[in-house]
Length: 96
Image 1 (cartoon, one colour):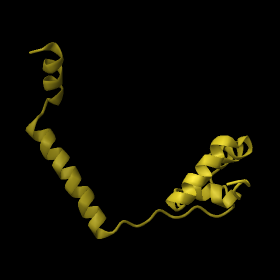
Image 2: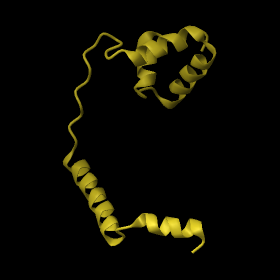
Image 3: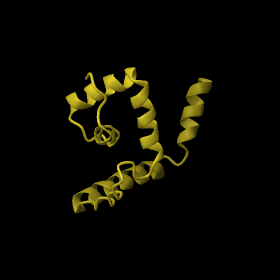
C-alpha cells in the first residue's frame, strides 16, 4: 500500500470489517506511517469517527442465547462441584 488509506478504510480496520488480505495491507501501512497512526488514534478516541450514528447492538439469535446459557450452566456446575478451586492450586504450589 503506497497511499494512505481513506478514513473509512481505517475505521473498517478498527471494526475488523476488512478482508484478511486488506487488513494485513492496511496494518503494514499503519506500522510505517505516522500520519495514519495519529488518525487511527483519533478514530479510537471518538464515538462516531465517520460521522455516522453508532450501530445498534445486534440482537442475538435464539441459538446464541442458548449457547451462552449452556456455557454459564457448565461453569456453574463446575464451580458447584469444586467449591474451593484455589485450594488445589495452593497445594500444587506448596508441593502438597
